[in-house]
Amino acid sequence: MIRTFHVYKSYGARNALEDISLHIQKGEFIFVHGPSGAGKTTLLKLLYLGERATKGQILIDGVNLQRITSKRLPFLRRKIGVVFQDFKLIDTQTVFQNIALPLEVTAHDKKYIRKKVSYVLRMVGLENRTNSFPPYLSGGEQQRIAIARAVVNEPMILLADEPTGNLDAGSSQIVLNLLRQLHIRGATVLIATHDRELVSQSNDRVIFLNKGRIKKMKIDD
Amino acid sequence: MRISVFFKRALQDIRNNRFLHVITVGTIGLVLLIWATFIIIFANVNYLVGSWQEDIRIVAYVVKGVDQERIDLLQKQLRGFYGVNEVVFVSADEALLRLRSQMRHQGGVLDGLRENPLPASFEISLNPFFHDQKSINGLVDRIRELKDIPDAQYGQAWLNRFLVFLSFFKMAGFILGGLLLFIAIFIISNTIKLTLYAKREELEIMQLVGATKLFIKIPFYIQGLLQGLLGGLVSLGILYVLFSVFVSRISLTELPLTYFHVRFLSKDLMAMVVVLGMLVGWFGSCLSLKKFLKV
Image (cartoon, rainbow over all chains, first blue to last red; front, side, top):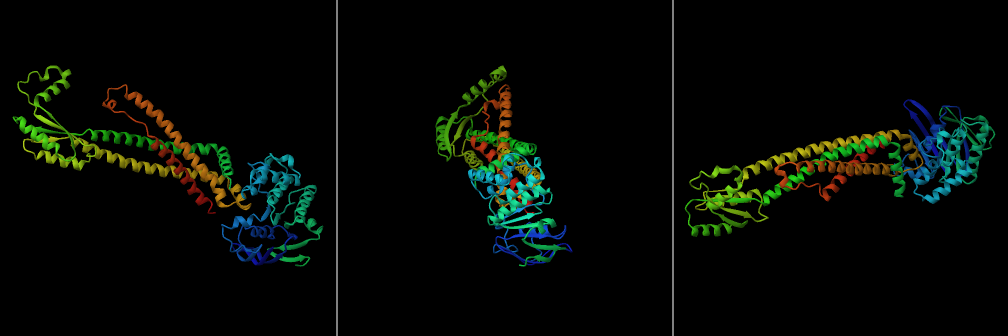
């Protein structure tokens, strides 16, 4: 599903990522773990093409990201759901409008959008917040809205950047359970986190990153 | 893709940035108002010149003492010229009579005349298709060559001067209009850039969830077109009010303009003003989006 070959990302003279080679199978649930500044967010950015790699190749579902044209890029992004560390919700739009956005860009009809948004809102337990605006929600609620938006069009891959980073223990558990549910439904889930406890409690594969390099992997490739 | 989604987005954005959009509509409206004013002046002056040209008559003077037989012959010859529609003979006595009638308010100015100083003449009206300067000049030259006709006139000098002035006025109008359009496009593209800047996070999010560039651009195109449409309608509304005031004022005066029916823009010209506004709005959007979405 995801393969990277000797990937580098540099900002000026500084290497944010060095020689990253990975193979992530379809349907895997995987953690990318490391301290702040290890390159976790940068790796995710390269995968959803928020930025391009300086060197190396990345393949997602058989598509080489280094060669993808700007015309085809939106269609690839529709296969990837992203939960951002800072949520990236549109403050001037309601919860409903925020979640509906990925469906609107794929030209689904109104009825389908309404049905699907209600469904994911129920799934994240926020069906009573449909018409609220993001700034009026708590951090945990905003995170769940961000997850709802990321999964509403049923992407093949879900990338989550510090999804529990700003949440209390209770909210973190809710969010993690949600991501587990999506994984059970068939999505490949990749979570970037610096939370050691979260990683140690799990039996899933973990990629340890430090100073832009892979240090080790728990459960081998 | 559903057009209603784009309209909804465009209208929502207009609501969120009302002030910027009012400024843009006002700018387009002002520029189009100046444009439409020029057009209304051109259209009326053209109509006026056209009606003058249709009414052009050549007056061919006849030497004194020519007998009736010669007059009949000359009239026949004149009727035979290409472009001539009607030839009417005005005798010297008739000419004096007309002058007396025109100068009736000046009382006895003509009373002291012992002898009629006016010559007899032919009034020659032209065919409707025969109104270009060159042809008329050619015809006048040929009439002047006739024996017993010492001179022929049609007031060409002042008409020529007027036409030169008119073409200068047209050129100035085009240059000024072009400049104004350029300024309008510049202002519109900058207003849209401000909107885009305010929405840059939203645009980034849209791209990240898989929106194509076209999906992002279309609501802005719609905004540009709507701004142009509104600007056009506003300018026509203001122009109509100004026009009505102008017409009511000149009808109260004794200006010779009252002989001429001043017209408002035709439906075609009004449509042209609105379409021009929409084009300006759309082009302004294109320009800013091209620069902004390059990033």
